[in-house]
Image (cartoon, rainbow, N blue to C red):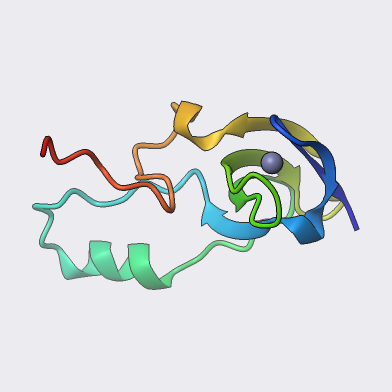
Amino acid sequence: MFQITCPFCGNRDHSEFQYGGDAARTCPGQNDTDMDTWSDYVFMRDNPVGPHTEYWQHVRGCRSWLVVSRHTASHEITNVTLAHNNKTSTETVPGQHKETGK
Ligand SMILES: [Zn+2]
């Protein structure tokens, strides 16, 4: 088992968190109509062994979405940041809705 350091709550067992997906994926544009692009985005997942950037939500704590850099084999965590600060992904953070201006 491993622990994740939540920026608000400190070190917590990973069982308090829920995995939210690959944080390095890029969502196709809303006007992208290529079915292969969308099919790959929706259904295809990498299963890397090694460093991986992932979304995790602290569901049994402050409910914040985090971006965690974790080695998938050793579970060593090298970085944790708040997801809304993630500048490496253009994808909408899970659980966050884009502003509509209304
Ligand atoms: Zn927390």
